[in-house]
Image (cartoon, rainbow, N blue to C red; front, side, top):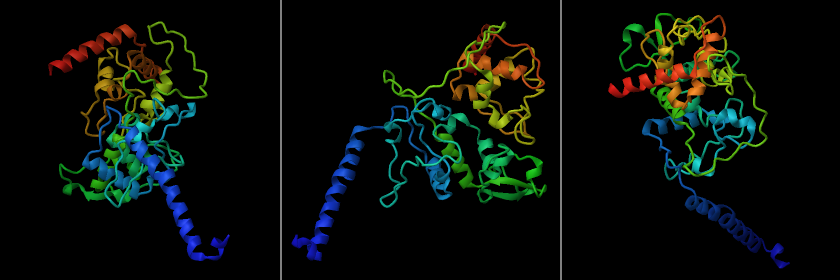
Length: 339
């Protein structure tokens, strides 16, 4: 074994071995994956502002606490409608020749997974409030605030282009100033809102979650509501982050549902319209996105969600039926088509 006594030959052998392994273990498989997988048909490339937001996400170390991968286990079902597949990451390209932003899949969930955060939480106002002071909307959050993504401005200096962040009074130290989101904050929120799982092409079987839990059973109600859906769970998934689990909202940021005249109204048309098409007519609160459309709520899910809100906390409104809400949806659809 003369090679071990000749350092030149030894190092040459090591270099050749390392190079061979690199080619066959890293380069060839990567090229094969590049040609084998394509982005899903409905996936949308990041816009310029979303790409900037991604760089803000990377620059602030968000990947240290948040993942972007829904595994095929039941406990991950809360983060997305299906487990992720290779095609979900196929459209990610290098930022430039020197910079590869990778997939940001992450390795730790100190905070929630963000794979589908654009659908779970489509509200720009919520994200901005959360970034400025997480505990304003999530009482027990361990996330650090990011005040450097915002600036304080005198009320008289506010322009139409400025995005004011709605905050509870206790988080505003100087009442004469307004918290305004910087361009980086707006870009970061745009990136977060772009994170939405795309449906697999028709005919392609969706991977199933493993180790499924036993589903809750619910009895049918007299008003014709769905017997298989849990309205409280739907509320937790789609509404509680803004309106809070106790339905009292966040003062100065998001309106309460507990005691709301709209929620308890005899005619539920306004409530259906707000859930399905959003609402932006109150200066004291931010814009509510069209939660129903964004999350493709079915008629049964909508009814279960509404009945939970109408009968929870101090609310004691009569429950709505499938037939009643279906008629309202048809009328609202006609009105929107004619506008």
